[in-house]
Image 1 (tube, rainbow, N blue to C red):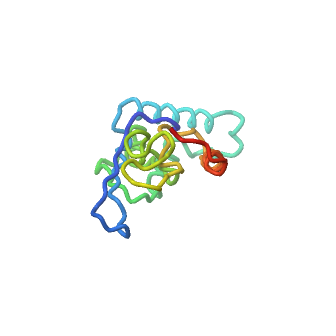
Image 2: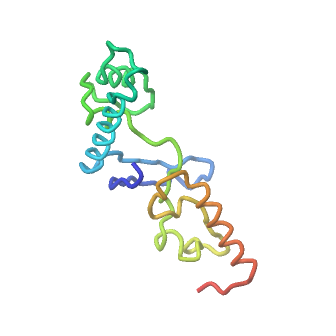
Image 3: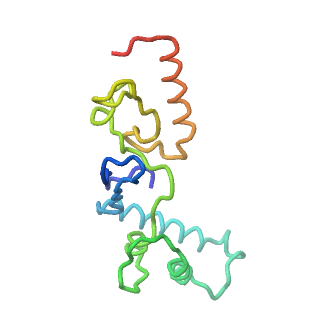
Length: 162
């Protein structure tokens, strides 16, 4: 899901910079996100059931059995519903998550200004994926690299930042 509606939050545990922050992701809190996930899984089911992939499937194995099998082997350390159902909605809620590329923890105009300066702190900028207000919809490495280069060039050229 490249642009979920559900939003989480980040809080500092304390003032110790060695402590990790508390992060609550709130996956699938919005019904539209659950529906988008279910539709994506249904698309995958149609692809698996397609004639083009028929020779790669065991004839006695249904898509539903594959969903159940994957649900039994996925380990993501998230709490699961006690219900053994393998409904696509429950599958999304219990098992679908992101592994990398969190973003949005340093929101523009709330944590950093339009020049990526940390509000209320002298001589500190944050120029990384945490400042993204939306996901680029792909691996953000190139976007982060270009943002860093753009801001670095501006700083080296001595551009006046408003």
